[in-house]
Length: 227
Image (cartoon, rainbow, N blue to C red; front, top):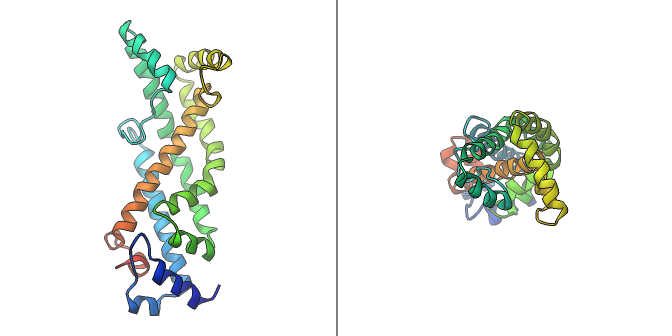
């Protein structure tokens, strides 16, 4: 891909309605453009990991808080009515604490994905939708992140006796067709929801950068994505 072609593509595609001034277009090359996209990705990824990988990062955030699967949530209402609400709360807290413990494992993989990004990847992100960054991360890292998260989640949920009971009950329910197979194991369920939450928050950060790149304080982001 030629420098001129890449720069022209940026100038008319923009980023979610953003455009480059003529002087920026003239000075901007494909190296600067790719660097700008990498900077945007790193900012979004690091911010998302920082928000989630701490106490109450999941539990205190309604956008990503991990609740019980639908079938168990209904059963939990009955448990609460019979005075076992504390045990239900313990399980919900344990699931979210497990996700909070797992998320910091994501940072190295996300950063490596950024470093391996090609100029073509950068152009696709600029041309893409409002969630192009999030989709890039999901495609590149979801599977290896799942492998990283699962042992951490397993260790965290093992501290709560209800986790074993959950798996026993959910396994039987799955055999009867009452529960989705993917929800029949609490460790896998929490791992999946933790990944969903991570990509949700990366998406939030992506929208902030697209809406106002100048506010990020990054010179390269201003140059590539500034109005």
